[in-house]
Length: 417
Ligand SMILES: [Zn+2]
Image (cartoon, rainbow, N blue to C red):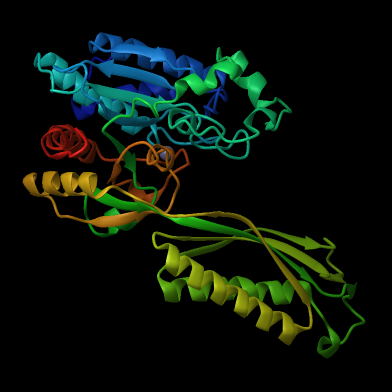
């Protein structure tokens, strides 16, 4: 099946398996593997087969995650957890998530082929529900493994009206048994994830790999601007209270202030009412997403943005209301893992490039039970969540090498053992 592979655990071996996983989709011609979907079930079954072939025990846990274990020389020691997720967004790419799972498998494959075991077990997890697209937010997966199941998850409904608890049941997961997936009482000594960067920095800096220092915190706002609708032809410009013009100034303010702060600010969804060509917009609603690896910086930026919005509202004679719809803190990566990755990159003769992850990851949940760290891998054009996602095979080779070395390094240096 994988005739082109150079040797087990190589970058070519990983790329061939990522191509194989891409065939598991619920939308022909695209890669769509939503949480608890039939295609994810099939991909999981394939992964479990690969894990067993590599000498691991493998199972689906009580929350629908795949968990494989390559036993260590001292079975009583806490395990090192590697992994990522196999679910995707709709019409996603073949590397976001899957790369981290298969690269971890390559590390175990290499150890197994060499007949080597580390002092501790390596466990590989493929989280079931990272992307959060099906139920409007992550419902299980890494949160269940961390013993922190989101409240009200059962009642969440997907776009087809399927309740989350029915979706997991159809997936073979008993909703009542989900808490049994918790590893809070038996935590790994560290969690390390290799993931595509989902951004352009590594490419710009000409680096194959980067060290993630933190997973950014995010504030989301829903802003409503209320002006005065009226006939486009009859209200003089001087008397207008145009909600869209005011909102446009707000969009520019978000962009300018975020740039000034070195943070990331985005206006996404924007709705204009009435939706007509000959009426002055009377009401506009838009979302703002602000992210930073530094919580204090994000709070200052948020305050500046709100102040700018208020000034714009006064100047334009419109009403303006801001609702904060979510607010999550940044999650720093553990210094012990960051240092281990830094040491490994130095040993490999690679530059030490540190960056924050703007996107959320399973590590946010796992950080509550174990020190976490992430290695980012350069992706072409910074593109993710898209069929155009691409990585270089040489970078994948570096990623596998780094991950294997980090396993050994953490075994030597971790104070958690
Ligand atoms: Zn991902």
